[in-house]
Image (tube, rainbow, N blue to C red; front, side, top):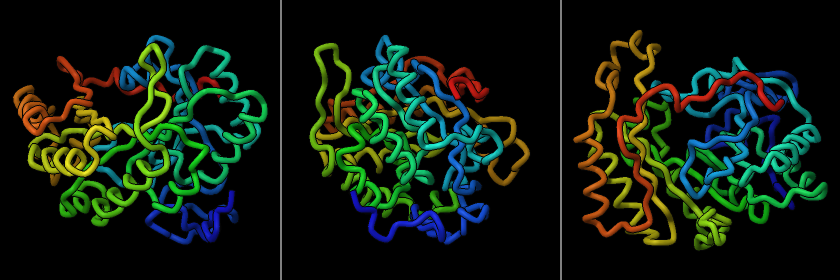
Length: 305
């Protein structure tokens, strides 16, 4: 596998291309240097049913993030403050340990800023006996060429599509180019893994699931995302509509964002789900009940590291 001119120092692994000298200890826009840090590696039952199933997904939470979402649900690790350093070999061992615990898959959460080393760890783990599907669980803000190079390494993309409105993307995530980047990345994901496939128990073996977290007051953005994904990819992509947005206390200290310091209402969410059904979306995941609570946010306590 050739990674062409992608580099961690000066760093151009993500669309930010901040050019930080991470190998020299400089922190990139993602708030981390080149040392892979992991906050948690454990079985996780809170993903979509075809990812977690009854066994649980072998989820590895990486430290750092290349977005600046003001409402970040995993702020503890996204800000780069929590996580233990691991070598490529240790990361491969972690994958195998999760497999031994019965994980349904290996679920890489925000791996993009470590992507070259994570890819090496996956290949190493496969040489050591890893047979599980590999899930790339990201923000959607990914370089198209990075996705292209992950062909044969990643089996499933569990990807966000946060915004189709660049104004919202700039306001809430400091990424006005998010819509165009996410479109290009999604196209490459679908091209590289193809149509979805499942085993006899309904667990996904390959495919793409697009997640959209409904933000309070932003039904129009949600509808536009759903329409774009469905009209572009039809049944080749599953859509996951999430109502678990949690207005964390940290946001209360930012009065300029008071409009999203509340939960999504049941009516808001039902309106978005109804819209998806009216479009003809069949391959979808929806959430029931009041799920906006911090129990969906795991303890980043170093388990499994």
